[in-house]
Length: 128
Image 1 (cartoon, rainbow, N blue to C red):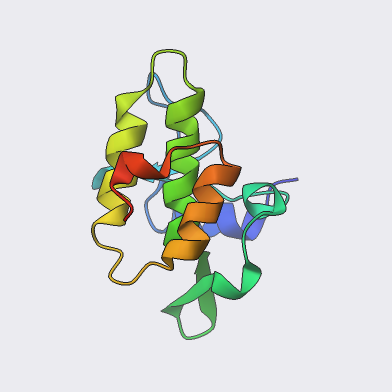
Image 2 (image 1 turned 60 degrees about the horizontal axis):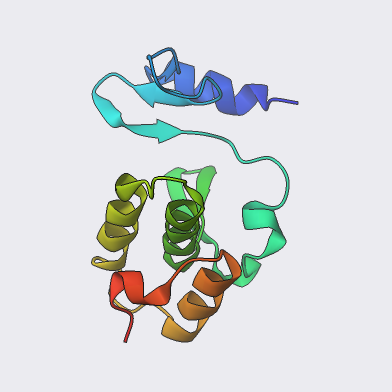
């Protein structure tokens, strides 16, 4: 079931339900930031493989937080999607590499384990 508070909050901030061609219809985007989408995750984050202690709450208002998954899990997910696509979706690989760059101090042991769990290749991002 959708979280109506989440939806109402996004709509109140000017977001729109995803309606663009070539996009999955389950999320939202803001017209001023069309490259970014927002989606509420239901079920276990990354199929329950995320270390919940690594989830980062970010305050967006005095009484409201948005929870962000660990960057290592985002990288592993993108590499897993890249490996799983028939034609190797290079956008997924680019995303993984871009996420890896700003990660000032990723936990390389955790990252390697998560990449392997997602059937990705740790060498694709030059993880040394």
